[in-house]
Length: 147
Image 1 (cartoon, rainbow, N blue to C red):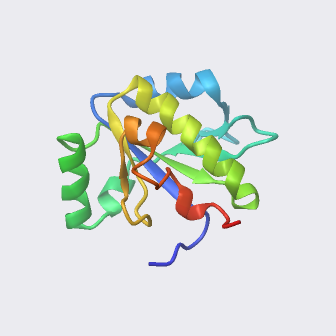
Image 2 (tube, rainbow, N blue to C red):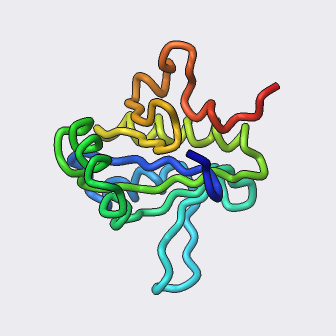
Image 3 (cartoon, rainbow, N blue to C red):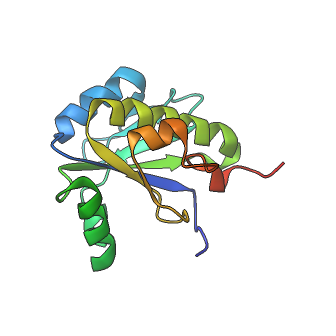
């Protein structure tokens, strides 16, 4: 499967409200919103030097196929209580992968949940796996440039 557009990972949370996740994002990222009609986006580490942008996406779970939904529910035990889409800055992809890992560890360290990278060979990542890797595979390694 070929990745279209910027690489994206989705964080699905169990028993965390969107307000809880917003507060956690506000601790480490700068939020930006042009008007009240626009969604709020959190730039990490900051707006000027951003490597990732996080945005709540209430409809993303519904956009998945039935099989994907079942797999996600099986991983977290139920339908997610909140989800955010984390988009990586493709212009600085190696730094963006590191930033996304840091952000995922921050949020998944506070709230139960998973990171889902639908284009990875092994798409589900829990906190300990992001921190330590899965064998020789690291979180978001499939997007890093090969040296």
